[in-house]
Length: 307
Image (cartoon, rainbow, N blue to C red; front, side, top):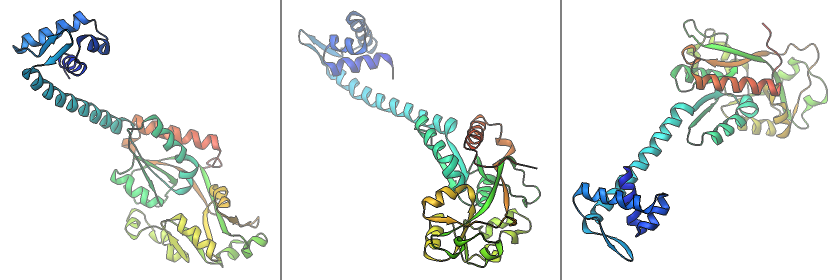
């Protein structure tokens, strides 16, 4: 709002040139001169002056009511612009699976919010194919997950490796599989469950899509909710198949990890960051990638990536 109007409003609300001058941190003669110039510019008296202070004239009341509205609009505009600036410069939109959410992104998101409280945060937790779908649609800037090797030709996505992850097998306490080291054949003889199966619509992104067919793999229960899978495992003899990086979390949830026989050929996946080539140079995206890599290295979550 115009400085002269700000000073006018301050005098009107204080009812005194001296009180308004103190609030505005101006000398009283300077404030008095500025108000006089405003009156001369408008061609009317805005205040009636007396020994007890000042009082608005009819003209002054009209200007005051208008100035208050102008001030409110000005303040709202500044707030909106600040929020828009924060959204454009600091807002983040990331995709992830549960493992990297718990171990990497949860603390990062909280710290980012504290540093930029006006910046929106969009987090998509789901299977890697869903995240890939959202990345290609522009709904997220990047996502963390295992490398998708069967992407169809023509889908250009950069992959920044972090390390590799290994499948683990988790069951309720008292489950027969916990009694001794087991082979993969013994484990798969039990019903299995897995979080975040691939939707049919997402199979269009890959070749050999039968590799992602949960029913072909014989899972007794699949869900887009890890919590639902945990409840199913607690209530049955099912085995939850999930990355070993969450073994500590599953232990806190009352599950035990099945010990594998040394000769077991356990499935491994390369973990990393997927990002569109054209967005990789964005400073905000670069900062997010650096933060993820630094956290993963500090926590030593994934064994080194090997070609």
